[in-house]
Length: 185
Image 1 (cartoon, helix red, strand yellow):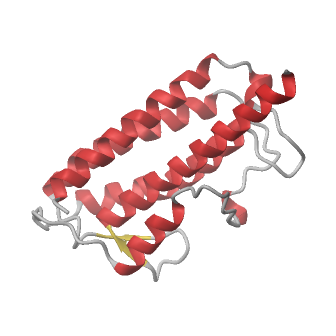
Image 2: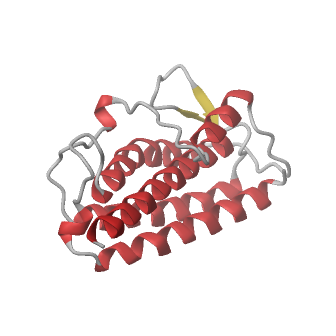
């Protein structure tokens, strides 16, 4: 895939994500913190989970992009592991639950609407990093994963994994909203 096409696609996905989350600002806190049961996440918990990942990946990507001496590639080729991780994050028709790492699990955290602002600010940072990534190699710049410092993914794969993870939890937020609507009718 051409590097520029990948970046354009990821920029567009991120803009759509921002637009979707902006709408949540109009919701009452009661709706944003509603849970189907004590082990399920609320809308704000989904966003806080994503914020915790953003706290890890965004500075990591920013540092590697800023300090890279690589040149941009015309073509981006997914790595085997990176491609697997990115695809595994995409939501499936039938819900594919995944275990969350303890340090990324916001279950029962005391959250308010500032979680939404932080999320949107992280997405704006992501847009900036995607634009900056046009000047470096999406293939040669490697990003450490939150799983292990020994596992590193290509920058292009990391962007795809990161955004697919967000899309996965936006689908979860959609399901929560439908459940709330059904519970109140």
